[in-house]
Amino acid sequence: MWVILCDTHAGARAHGSGRTRGADPMAYAKPALLIVLGVLLASLGACATGERTGPPNLAAGSWRMSQMPGFELSPDASPTMTVHEDGRVSGSGGVNRYSTRLGGPEERPTAMFHHIAATKMAGDPDRMAVEQAFFEALSRADDAVVRNGTLELKSEGRTIATFRQSRE
Image: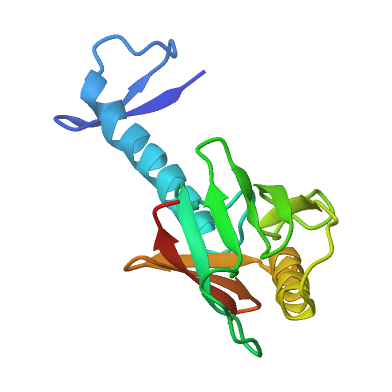
């Protein structure tokens, strides 16, 4: 069996035994490094597709809703959201308490939130309307943007709710 080895100092050498006796170990370093770099670049390219395969990276903290299209929000009764370190999310819809988790269910992997649960108390009709729209926004959200103390929940690229960071 004949094996061709690349030797950076002496060109190509042929060894009839197939053994690498006398070969420069650095001759294999460059091709191995190129293979590793190629794999890394390919994996980074997969990250750039914009497809999310797990829960979004939403930093822990507390937020109070400041805007939602079609609604005037009362500062004392606007929905709140607290994102916990372990991925739990909880808060008030304005009337009822709710809880959920970051990351969508298997049937909707791009969803931001998983199985929203809430208490079922009745309240002021205007507050109930805001709360219902907020819970619908949570169920539709597929992305979030955080910048300068503001959190925007998005659905299909459109902002569906805006929050300001709070100290709750």
